[in-house]
Amino acid sequence: MKKTKFIAAALALVVGAGLAIPAAVTAQQVATNYDTKVNFTKYKTYHWVDIQGATYPNQLNDLMIRNAIDSTLKMKGLVRQDSGSVDLYVGYQLSVAQSTEWNAYGTGGGRWGAGAGMASAQQSTIETGTLAVDLYDPTMKQLVWQSTATKTINPSSNAQKNQQNMQKATDKMFQDYPPGAAKKK
Image (tube, rainbow, N blue to C red; front, side):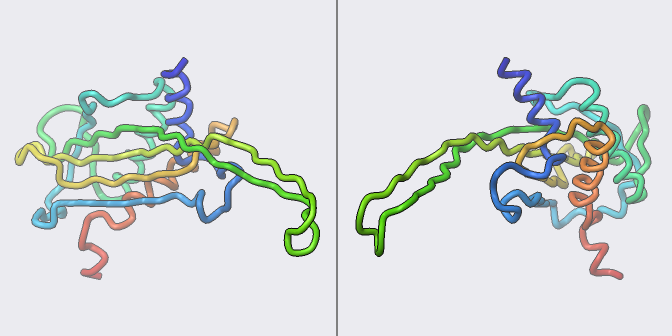
């Protein structure tokens, strides 16, 4: 049961519109980190790898995530190779965190809080998913770039909409890839 819930939550990582919280809170958060000493323009090819110890969704959701990343990397000029020597290894992993939100409602109370009134509070669980994409240099044998996208989970029942939203997320994650390219323009 817990694994099924994780997989469903992981799929929905960046594909929903949010729950009952303000839109600013549900906005997708993207963070990127990289080795500042690496010349990223030298990378032209990549190969998919699985990250040891990472949890992955079912085959359909895994394919959706990989297709979105493949499409984004292609737009960035990288070519996927399934065999032979490559410049980069690409992997991803997912995580889901839960938090509790309390919504309090009050009625009555008279003027300046004097008098009788009623109050109630409602608890809800908010699930937040994070997708991390890692780029490894096989020659240096180290992680050279990572981006994470974090969002409140709320999947659509429309597979095409989920794929489009995943594509938007990966495009945003790779927006400034390769590092320093925007400064040179």
